[in-house]
Image 1 (spheres, helix red, strand yellow):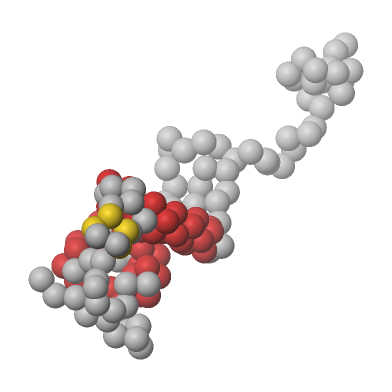
Image 2 (cartoon, rainbow, N blue to C red; image 1 turned 135 degrees about the horizontal axis):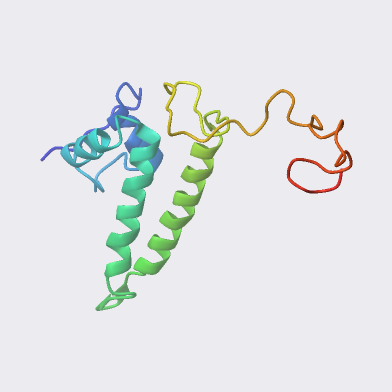
Amino acid sequence: MTSTYNPSLTTNKDWVRYYLGDVEDPWLFTNEEIAAQLTLNEDVALDTAIEMCTAVIARYARKASSPTVGPFSIDYGQTADQYRQLLVDLKLQRGAAASPYLSGYQLDQAEDGDAQPFLFEVGMDDNLYSETYEGTRSPTGWPQ
């Protein structure tokens, strides 16, 4: 089990460590743990950092709130709170790079017959009943 960090951020593993602040000993995660999570997240460093930040929160939340050994005590609750705030910040950062979305279709998605139709189309406001005795009513039955 190895843990390394390159400050030039040449790999996604280094980016994950950068996002988490896991850049020196004692390490939060091994390289192998980060590589496994990167594989699950399709090699997206920010998504991987979010998942691993959640794991760190769970790790510190399970520990005793304030263990005391002699004159020393550790507050793991404060550490968990700091990572909770980091998780919020990472999610906001991910949200800033939102992908376009259009009425059930993503721009890079192949056409799917089961997808929802477009919400807007040419002629959607046309009064189809204008020449009939129900000229004041729309096809839905609502007055225009």
